[in-house]
Length: 333
Image (cartoon, rainbow, N blue to C red; front, side, top):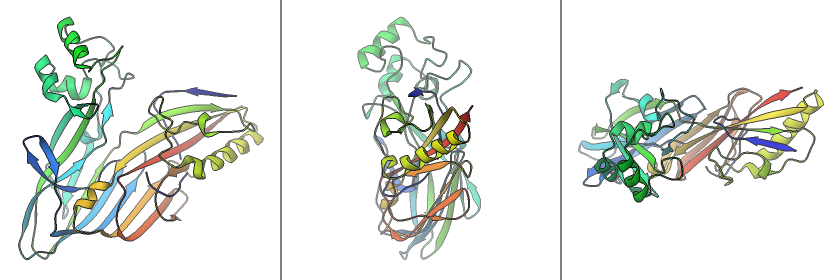
């Protein structure tokens, strides 16, 4: 017998094929906002990406192979996030953009942010502004942070007509991109590093040891009603999780809470640079040695230490995204 309870939390193992925030990309500012462009001059010679539930750290080396300096906008898109009904009146729906820090050759760089409200992938930001919502309401409180309407009856009617408000909650998602202007000197390499705190999803499931465990009984996503296995759970991690639960049962646990924390990272924008990534490393750092990580990614990882696994590639063409599921276990007598 399994009892699934949805809140916000998560856990860990690991796998291979492909599946949390984003790679740098060249971009331009157009009439419709920030758009991504492809460069034939600048190569990403090295990327070291480290993903955990508490931080994302990315270190790059870029080489301008042309004979002239190149001035470009560099953009870093974040995964979108929805309104969180669990926030209190004192909280806003704070995304990872607030903790985003960039340095170039060791010097901190100021960034700007482009924010959009999307409804079924359509930008409705201006429509929400015309209704009278502030940027704070659109991108942070979603106008309903304390479960009480902060809009007038007229505005609520307009939101429902727009399709932006459902039975009880706002329907739009927030998409944000950090960007800055960068000069790439001719025939020179520069070092870019950035870090931020990811917006991790959180869910837990109660499991009874020594009973059959199927994928449908274990959370694969923190998104409610989403059973899509984007982290290749069925290809190995599920068996490892079942063995872990049964082992805890043999040690006296009557039930085990399996916490899932999932993190999404956007990789595909790295394809906007010249050629493949010359030298690419992905490190996944678990919460603790007993956690299990599940992700789809090409190649076979190696164990760096009791908490870290590593993928390494030469001339790497990245997939669009990677979803990392971290599973952690709490036994109860």
